[in-house]
Image (cartoon, rainbow, N blue to C red; front, side):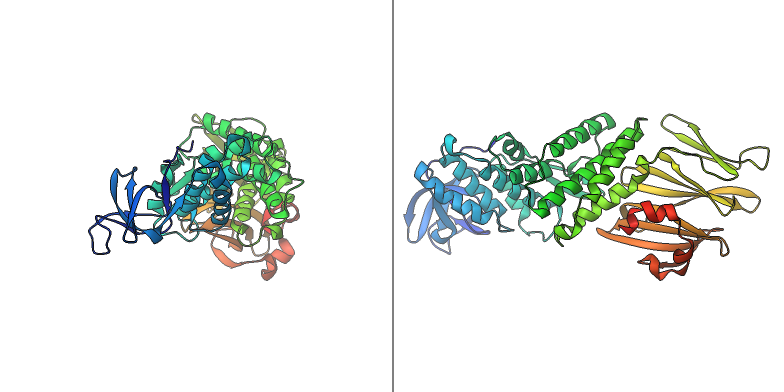
Length: 466
């Protein structure tokens, strides 16, 4: 909730403004003030304003050019709203804009309040949190700006995400937007997007709480009417729904529930996205969705037994584990190999290749991470090798079996991964015997074996060709 502002006030409009002990440039500097700081004006002298800073409990003098008086009477509300509208579209001015927004909410009568100021302030709070997290061009004074907006009740949540600090706006004003009966479809869509960000879910939450969070996110997005939205916002809503349904599918599979409907919902929503509508600014958002949905694409496929002489069975292991056993119908005796995992084993992905020379299987240990297991002989024994989506500080990704070239004994795979904050898509030919890389390319057309030996089902269903 925004705190009440002092009756006679001014708003600091620039960063690094010096609060001095006397009304002259050579006087001692008592404090450094920042855009959006609110001061009580108590007089004027020699081009300086005598002010008092209630947040720091300190008085002093500030050059008049660094401060703008802000009236709080009802008659001042239209001017404050105009400034709020202007600043809400200026990156780097979030603290100042939030300060003017707080002044407007104090000046405007309750009967005149709409969803607009809550939408604008929440958007700036989210943008400020992104800057604090290092997303986009980071403002050098972002820490000071966070302190400024805290006096208006703008709360941030901070946690560790993939080894870096993640700052997220708590979202109270987005909820106020949704509570406004007259809020527009665009305002409701922006609020739902602000409250369903995947990077603002604390990775430390337990599975039961995470299931509740995902269900709430799904419900918020389903209540958005995307039909009247502009193309960019409509595609953002579809992409976010796809991402949330992917999380729901993974959670259901983790709990032993049927994930098929959720997985299909994720694919359907992804196909409703028009990437060209998102532009360059939102491309990373779309790619993130593409990778997350790609990681769970097997959720919508019904379980099936692989054809051929190799047979794969699963059984519970230690608590939370699934153990995979591979046998050969052509020979009696013990199983060829057995391996256990805490990940989700997508049995529908199991496929015998090379006339029983090997088998591939998709295993997903994390919501945003799917590996490829390759069962193949190594000397007199069978072994299980794991192909991961990436190795250089990967954050999320998946790897697909894309085909097999029998004459050359080469495995064809496709990878999509985010590494060091950038998305990469690679198509590779690997030697089956040791999974050594033979060649790779950014598109399958550049690899001759993909043209002849790629798997038809992979080409039909894989999101790597999307």
